[in-house]
Length: 517
Image (cartoon, rainbow, N blue to C red; front, side):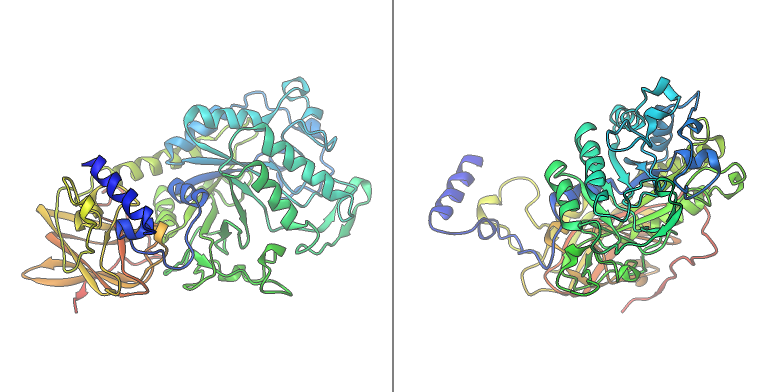
């Protein structure tokens, strides 16, 4: 059968028939993610580690005049931190290798203000190396944050600073293996030490850093890494530090330049306030990264143990970040020993346990799936197994296999008949995002007391859409696509029950049943 299919494909290719025509696959609609962005979406939850001189001065933003001798933890263990992140459900870790104070956590050749000038590890330490190695050991992706602003450098604000900053990036991009993300903060310019000048230096953040060249270094040296900035180019700031995307959030986005809207590569960030929702018909695939600190601040402070977010609060953030098609970036701050403290570990451990419990059992598994319209599969692929585009594709656990309708069919219904009556209160939907955002409106109904009753509805699905609601018992659920820009390509419909230990936050009411149309 495989040989016959290959021969058939070769025959069609020889006569100029495209691969899409051979498989009858739908054409992509609008912008679609790159391979690096697909991997980013699959990571879903990762951490941003803030640790450095600010940890010892009890500041959030260092001035730049801090003495490197302050950095001398006796118990530092990157493995302890990364292991805690993994238990907390994280799949990646981004280390703040240089914050705005300019202190570099690796032995750089670009400035004296670096970890080799501290007594830690006898001046031979490299914290970036230790975190990169710990991430690899525990199976997490690794990324770096290198602040463009440098309140220590005497050259900052002059043309002489750019070669210094680019040199720092080159070191980070070439010494520590494959990176999954490189983070560029939006804070730029202001008062600082600046080599003893102790003055305020303002720069034009849209032009000073030569963003096309700066981003080009990442593309050249780490082609698999996503670049984070206020408006991209690979993933955008969600626009707040609460970790919440908008109720309807789109991965598509149109960066708007300060002076030239056609040139987002200038690094202009004028429309980051539109980050929570994105743009339905945006010109580029730039999904939302939802960053939020585990504590009140991004760095550890001795009087903030009481501010550690609870597992229930973290789950709410998860539903409003990952559950809105983005990624959740949780700020975790090691203490002055270089370790995750007990209060943070308790919250991370319980949150990770709740995630595992929640998604351990998909109650839709084994259901019979039908649809009122199914895209025709190519004859050559109609042998054994599940046919391409078949309704059952939504249950195969593959993000990129999918049920689809014929071109032009943008209203369709998918029905799941469960193996038995089951109780659930969480529903997860996914589109095959390789083919773009396609669905514009949908409703989910549950069979109750002899009739269909509405349970949830929305507009955007994308990489992941999660709904929480009241517990219901049923053996049937249906997804109705009521509006779409192109034929729907649904890759997952899953059902779960929220762990009993988790209560809804008072800030977000659960979904309520309503009559189905």
